[in-house]
Image 1 (tube, rainbow, N blue to C red):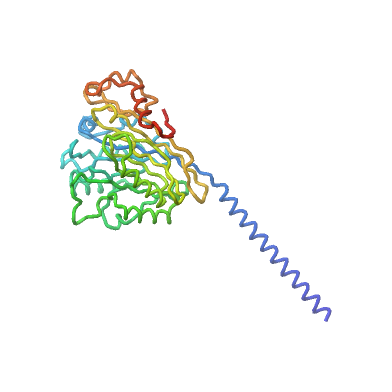
Image 2: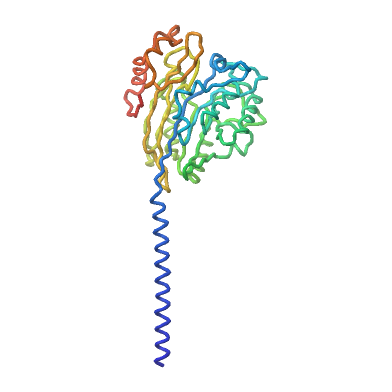
Length: 382
């Protein structure tokens, strides 16, 4: 009997020691996993540029002797900032409809696809095509644009769709382990109807669709950005539609809105919905490049945002608005875009816009920025 008791006690001790070791190993594994999660401390640098608006002088400025086009000179003053960004975004206002449809500027734009090649070479990761000029060359022009981008699968193209499946899909990119949903919509196509046999070609500002897309994004991504082509042309303040829609999108769970279309800059602000969601809004970055004839239309902005990823969620670490100036000479050539903080009065005195809208200077542009942001708390990178 004593032997049986001793044997039982030995088995009990061995079993418990085994369990203890197993539990200790499980605890150690849990600590290691937890340690790995705690060690994730990624910063994701994001920059976004406004509308790439190619009037004929801009198109012609890139023409080379062999008949091809190159626009790298327009971007050179913004490098290596673009290439160094983890995510670089630009709004491509005009389509790449093909030379057969004729290159053209306002009012029905069609740009050389060599601009698209330049965007790839300059390091852009996301190109926004939802704009009011997206159907300027009709269905064929848009399909040619979509087909052009098929040769560059590394670039995420938003706002336009070849299939209904693409229309219903929400694009999610992965950066340093973080999943970021990116959405793009336009308020209009300038009265040009979307092809009846392809009603899904363009992402329009449709509240039901946006809400549906945002719900999917919230369930499948760590952070949601909406790029909105909206607002009132030439207004430096957000209109009632922008304000109302921003409030709704904040309540739905969008984390960041970056807007364009008005051809001028608009302010930046944080907003908070009644359910506690907070969202940063860049109402309008204005034009990236254009040959417009008012000084204020040649003042644009770049959104500079650092996101933080801790392994579980993405938050905005810091943000800034960098004013930029589109420069051209009296012959509407030699286009270049400069950060305002690097622009000079020596350049300004030769700006071609002075023949239409008076002399420009660094101070005049700084005063414009200050006026737009008056009453708003924002980090302006002068």
